[in-house]
Image (cartoon, rainbow, N blue to C red; front, side):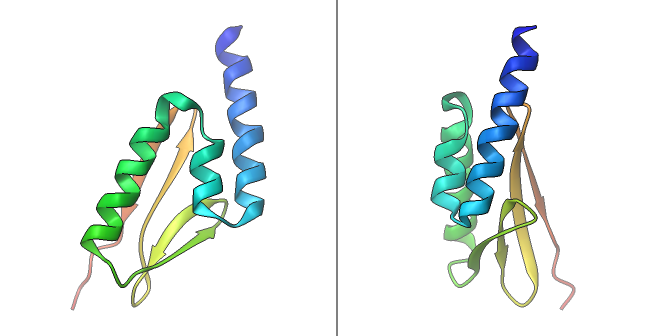
Length: 88
């Protein structure tokens, strides 16, 4: 029962943050338990690809450099990171 409440709350907060269009707001809206993980992912992406543009798309932070480069999102207190390999 408690897990369902956390899931609903997480989903509600993340939708609000996504509408704000701000990655800082997205991370701040995340539950405290996963904020550090999301901040680490963000730092790794920005360090690895400093020229990439940071945006919110499809309700999650994404990074674009010559096309979509990477994105991450929060779901049920876990995060997911996906990148798009460069083929030349």
